[in-house]
Length: 449
Image 1 (tube, rainbow, N blue to C red):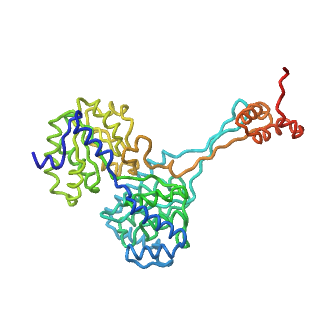
Image 2: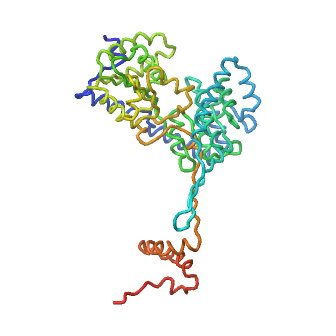
Image 3: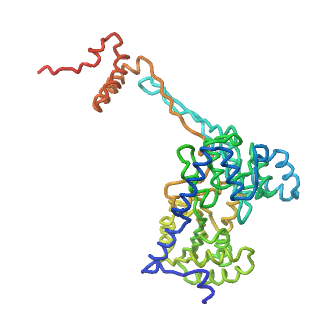
């Protein structure tokens, strides 16, 4: 059983070991060190101050690629050519993914609305898409055309005027370029890292300033997004990926193990968690994990992730299992139980919820339709998946005529004076009694006593 223990720690939900293991999971993440933050601050400040000169200098320094204003943008013809060069089966798979993601997100569209209240005021909300959005397309240990689709398509469905992408030079595969083409990206630039985030946030001659930045990246990219927030909106600060599987004793151990590995292979900080009332299932899953690991191309990454965070929590019953899932608030939650729909109302905190053994997490990653950009690290307690609603903004609409002001104005003036804001009160009172002199408008009433 030693090999199995190396890949999945079985922990009862009582005692010191449970507290320690849960704390380890809750505290995990790729936190920016002081050194990283100082470096990123300098990069962001340099690009903000010197524009393209700093952007190209950092690209040469970090990526070894010399760029100019003429070569920084990937021509649309090159993107279309990359898409055409792929096998038909790959193009059709990417196209189907884009179609399904678009179909789901069209249901999230929000419309403007207004109404007249009893006092005659017109009140409402105007919903408008953002003008320009920037999408970060990471390089790194794997290509992620699915992330391009998941970030670009909702923005286009929302009606964003222009969606531009940035990706480290020389890292964009034909599949990534094809996904950008199918998703409808407007422009794509070959810059990456913190310098690309700064360029999107503040604009340079070559790269236009955006209103919002979304898309995953490493700790330097995440730190840059955090530092530019305020000058520009961001989607979220995403941490390492995670899956939590609530399973009963009837679950197939080989399927549960396969789903845990689908997260563990992301990176060494990924968390793969099983919560079950069945000790026997936990032990079977541990054996299945050990058996399946050897067949993976990214087995060294998966093994390191499991050694750090692979955990099977054994609960008293399913109700306790679901409550523990709510406490952890995972990015992905699988309910591999009999009648999962019965347990769905009990789930309060999760980025995405997968119902039953035939709805594994990878289905949501690629083709189901809902977005795979999800809150991590417990932030599902207060945050939501990326969606169309992230690419629009809402303005309040307030209209009033003389009748409304006559009815509600005195109350407004009273509340303003309660806060000591006489100018607010006077602005209302001039409309209620426009012929009054200034001293009459502002003079407080005297008591008759």
